[in-house]
Length: 207
Image 1 (cartoon, rainbow, N blue to C red):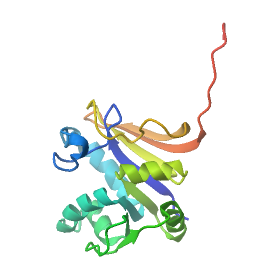
Image 2: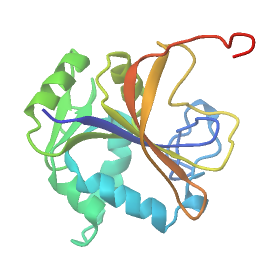
Image 3: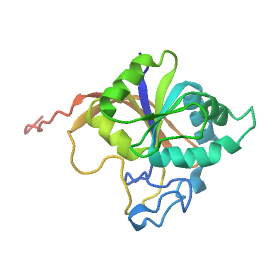
């Protein structure tokens, strides 16, 4: 069974909306698209190559799929690891409206999405089943304990508004830190594994 992983870019205040460009996602009047770009560096590129090199298939929300499918098929350099993985490996897009995806090797996931994703994990024989971005999808799957590992690339910028990966509400959850590194531009890359429900306590006097 494949491990389902989530890789996403976030700001210091947890915003994940439109990291790659001003027009990427303006939902809710978001005006700060492209906040990742000033910090993109070799260290970030190296980590992302490592992530994509482990991919066996991709699971994407509709918005992320539309962004990726408009860009990556145009990248034809065989030495570009990310493009080669995205353009050739199976892609599963969660959508209620997409009927005839043009990007090669794409299938549409609909209906009982958590159940379908659980089956995709079982059917992905090699590599990771990877989510990139796709915040709404990621939140729904975390609520069903389906995501096995989270790569957070935390950028040194505060945005003050926008869609967050961890919104208010939801079950308090603990995570185990599996790995950490920092890039030259100050991106902190942490890899976490869910570790059950969060626990709480108090410091006793004199402890």
